[in-house]
Image (tube, rainbow over all chains, first blue to last red; front, side, top):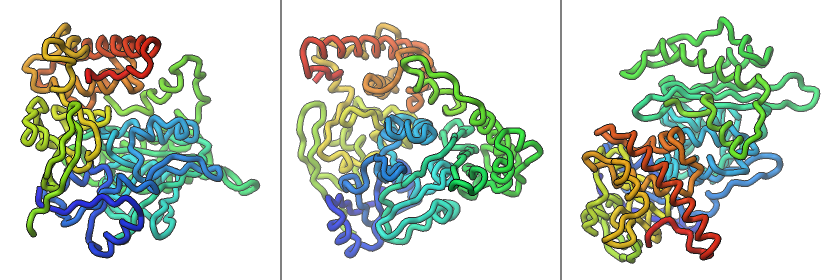
Length: 296
Length: 178
C-alpha cells in the first residue's frame, strides 16, 4: 500500500480545519472496502481522515417516529440493536447478512453507502425504504443519492452523518449470494410504506442490487404490487436482460431472471401472516429464517 | 512525499506498547513484524480466509484489513495471549485439541479467536449456528467437522464458566486468560 498521511479528528471543528488544508482527503470509515481497494492499487489517497472518534456519526435512536442511525454504526451493531429490530426487522436482518462477522464488526452503514458498491446490500435496503441521507451540508433523498456504479450525490468534502428511516408496513431483503464474496449476485429489497390518510393504497418500493450498473428501483414491479399486494401480482412480469450486466459469476439473463424469482419469494413471505413467536429465541429464529438469511 | 511516521499506543496481550509506525502499517504486519507475534497467520491477505483474525476490544476482526492506527488505544488479543500460562491451554484451544479441530493448523489461530469472540454473541452452541458464525474463516484441509464440534463444546463450557463466575466472583467474567 502506498504512503499516505493519517488523521483522526476528535471534533467536527477539527475535521473542518483538516478539510480546508486537505480538500482532496478521503474519509475512512471501517475501511473494509477502501483499505482493500488501496492495497490493490485501485485507490491511492494522499490523506486519510479516520471518522471513528466523531460522536455526531454514532448512535441509534428513535426520533419523531423515525429511526436515526449514525453513519459510523457498524453492521454488527445495527444487526443486534433492539431498537432497529423493533422498528424494522428487515434492517437488522440485512445487516446480519453482510459478509462475515469479522467484517460486520468494523464495516459501517455510512461507509457502505458512500462506497455504493453495485452489489452491496445497504443501497438496496436504503433505497427500498425511501430513507433520507443526512450529510454535513443537507438532506438527500435515497432516490437522489445513488447515482450508479460507485457514484453518489456526495460532493467533495461532504460527509454522510446519518440515515433516517420512516416506518414501513412491511419490508424484507433477500439476496442470492455470490458464494466467494457474499456480495449479492442479485438482491431484492421490497418495502410497503404507509400513505397519508385518505391518499389511497400503500406505496410499494422495490430496489434491486447486483444487476451490475448500480442499485435501482423496479418500477413495473412497484406498480403491480401497489395495485395488488401479493406474489400473484408479479405473474408474467420479467425484468429485461438489458437491465443487467454479465460477468464470470452470472450472465445478464440469469441476473434479470433472479430479480423476478427473488421478488416473488419475498412478497409471498411478506404477504403471509407472521409465524407465532413463542420461544425465548423466537425473535432470533425469525431473523434466521432462510428468507432473511444469507444462503449457505 | 516523504513517508510520515505516527506514534501508536496499543495494548497487545495485556502489555502496553507505544511505537512509531508508518500510517500504512496493517495490524497484521505490526503484530508479526514489530512485535514478532507470528501466531497471527497471513493467509489470503485479502480479508477472505480469516487466518489473520485477532480480537480487538473483544471483537473478532481480520488484521490484514485494518490499520494499526485505527486500533490505537484499544486492546488486542492474539493467539499468543489466549492461554492463561505456558503449561495450560485456553478452554477453546483444549476443545480444538480434544476434537481434532485442526489438521495442518495454519487456519487454527484465526478459528480459535473467532470462536472465543462468539461467546459474547448470539451464537447458539449448536452446529448449524456455529457453521453460520464461522463464515469468515476458511480451512483448506476442510476439517470443518472437528472444528464445529470443538467450537460448540468450547462455547458451552466458556458460557457456563462465565455464568458461574458471574454468580460467585462479580466482575471476573472475562473469557480471556488475561
